[in-house]
Image 1 (tube, rainbow, N blue to C red):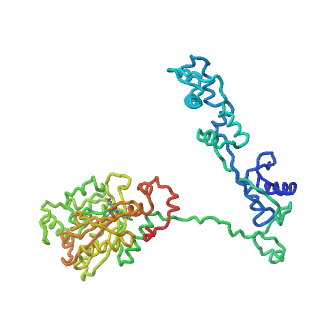
Image 2: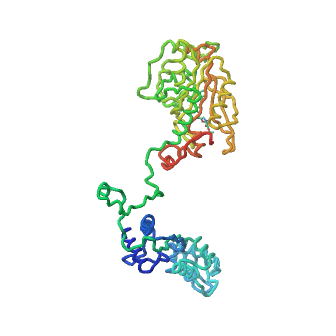
Image 3: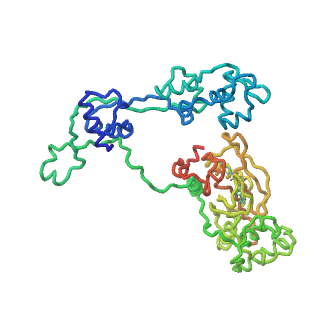
Length: 498
Ligand code: FB9
């Protein structure tokens, strides 16, 4: 029935009966029960702005049989069928026989019949333990089917547990006449039109009241992925501390800037295809600042700047290999090299947040790529203490307090430290990043004055995002398994609320 038809049905019934105690009983034109949800629409439009009727919601619950429950109410319970199938007398029936007779009813029925002490077992045979039975299950189900309820809540609970019936909430309404009750539904004017203004008809018109409770259509629009929200929060933290963002929009790097410039030796395990995605085509780059490259070759081979170097035969071919950058530190090396070429040195603070790629075994928290967050500060006389102090400040702005520092090793920083924080929620110490002071073998070949020290640190974007949004498997955050409502409904990221 259409809303209009339902409205008319309500008004005529009200007119006939004065009021409607419970709309559950109302039958539509082809004598079928009226759909209460559709009826609600009709009642709303007759009451809200027209005030032709008033209605109260009636919440009731009835018990309804499941298909299996209906089956039993029609044909008897499994346990009764088992009992009936067992011939009276000592002999009884062999279980396998019974299985053939009753199929999968046997198992369920047998269990219940034993429980009802209707049958007993003798060897492989089932024999009757009583002469006759009352199929109470069937009787109870029939009662529920015909009345929608049962006097004994225990019976309801038991039959519900046996998945034979379920409780359903029934919504219906009691309706009374409203102040504007009439049998004719006057079409209400929705808008005031130019014609109405010219004709003056607007003075008499009955305007539809504004429904200020109407929710309106939820605005559709884009949604920021949680990673992008945390990235923006981190960018704001860096900007407010005077950092400049490094240009990281180039995923393909040469091994030279990704490794050699960072004094990472060419036989370092991270430089083989097990850990790094090398490019097949184009496979190499030949564009390098030759003088600087010579100094890098020299420091790897023979050292210098107070270092003994690695003493191996450094090959240009290795440095030319193109790869997907394994860290944004590749960009930091390039930025520091450019800094060294500036006439006059000025302290700098750089940061980057972008994708890096590692050919690693994928697990619940690791994919073959992640977003690295990196900070670099170059200034005269910086110390490890400055680095530690700065970590307290930086992570403090992320709401991460009470840090611990553990000596670590990176080819391009000495000393290096892993950073830990005790996470109340997780109840454990969490590794929240890595850091160190870039080695002179990295900085001085660039042409940076030995007095200039560079502290740097890095973390991932994924880990804080997973912890902040309570996601324990990276596949819930990234990839085809992500549930879009998480993207559409995830809250803002405010670090100070961690
Ligand atoms: O992000 C990491 N952990 C983390 C960070 C923040 C966080 O916030 C919570 C709100 C409290 C929680 C956790 N890690 C770094 C630590 C581990 O997750 C680690 O297992 C995985 N690491 C990645 C690399 O995995 C191979 C995270 C990634 C990482 C590691 C090191 C660097 C950057 C990212 C670096 C560096 C660096 C060092 C010196 C100089 C320049 C850069």
